[in-house]
Length: 234
Ligand code: BTN
Image 1 (cartoon, helix red, strand yellow):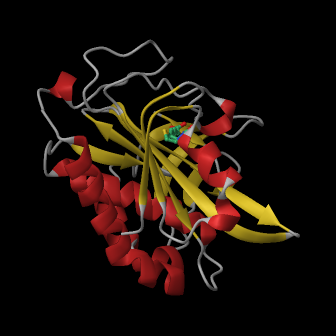
Image 2 (cartoon, rainbow, N blue to C red):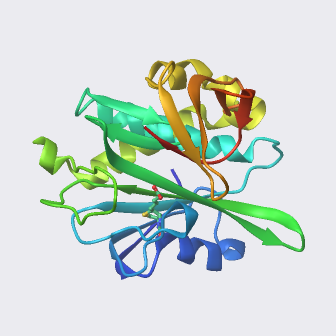
Image 3 (cartoon, rainbow, N blue to C red):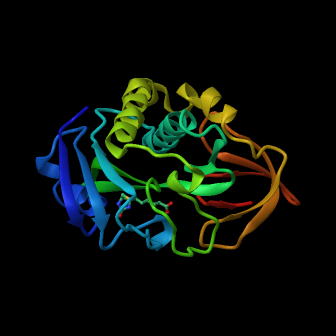
C-alpha cells in the first residue's frame, strides 16, 4: 500500500491526483470525508456528502496493454470486500457494485497524459457507507448503513486495496483474463435483456457474456456486438 493523503474536504480526489501525478509515486491514495465537486462517469455529478467513502489511487504501470482492466479489477476488489459484509452484492459491467440491485459503489478512472504518453491512471472510487439517505440520482441507490451494516471506512478501504494489489501484477501481465472467472461469478446478467448507453444511440439486446478481454458481448437484432464502453441499464 502506498502513502495515504487525507483531506476533510476537497473538490475531487481524482482532481488532486491528476494535478499532482508527476510528483506522486505509484500507489499513492487520496481520501476525503466529503467532495465539493465529486464527479462520476459520463460527466455526471457524484454526490459526496459526509458519510461516504471517497478515495482515488494513482497507478503507474511499467508496461501494459491492459489499462482499462485495472478499473474492472477495482470493481472486483470492491465486490469481494463488500460481499463479506453484505452477501447480496454483485457486479454490473463494467465496474458498478450493486447491493440488492441498487447502486452501492461507482468508479471513475482517468488517464494522465504527459508529452503524448500515458504517465499514470487515477482510479477513483465512491462507496456509499454511512449515509442515512441518498439524494435522487435517477437510479436506485443504497448505502451500507441503509442495508443495516455499520462499516468502518478505513478498514473497508484497506480490505479493498488488499484485494486490488493481490491481483494487480497478474492483470498488468495478462489483462482481464487474469480475473475473468471471479468477475463472471459475480456478474448475474447473462441472459438478461438490457440496454447499453454510451452517449450515442442506445443498443438493445440480450447479454451473452463478459469476454476474456473484459468487453460486454451482447446479442442484438443485427447480430453479436462487442461493447468496450457504456452504461448497462437493466
Ligand atoms: C460513477 O459511478 O459514475 C463513478 C463515481 C466515482 C466517484 C468517485 S468518488 C472518489 C473519486 N473522485 C471523484 O470525483 N469521483 C470518484
